[in-house]
Amino acid sequence: MEYKLATKEDIELMMKSRLEMLKVVNNLPQDYQYSDEIVKESREYFLNGDQTTVLAIDDGEVVGCASMSYMWIMPTFSHPTGKRAHLMNVYTRSSHRRQGIARQMCEMLIEDAWKKGATEISLDATTMGRPLYESLGFTASREGMVLTRS
Image: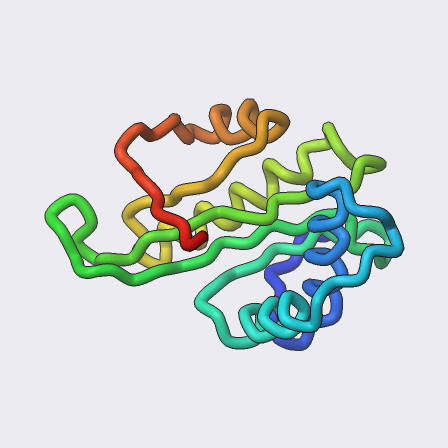
């Protein structure tokens, strides 16, 4: 198994992996057609967003991916750099699950986030992902609130 920090040259691998992941986690049919907007904006984010993506490659085929997105907010006493990170899109193909792939990708991204000065890493966890994230030290947070545009 090869683990690779993706670069802009890996854009097609990142896009293929992300679109595959979205189909699986949203129970979409294999022939589902994404809107031009989601494809365009995903590509743009991989190319120009403040993010790091890890790809897990087995025998030349991407079998897992995970991304860390960064945001910069006004510094506070508890977050003096103002740099926060959000772990997302952690995905491993079903044929490769339970082999430590997701853990390895997360550990790489967490280490990279600390090196980049992040003072907090958040994530949105599925029920299936919770045990992994808890084993990595993540705890549930009751601090946050969200307002979404309807």
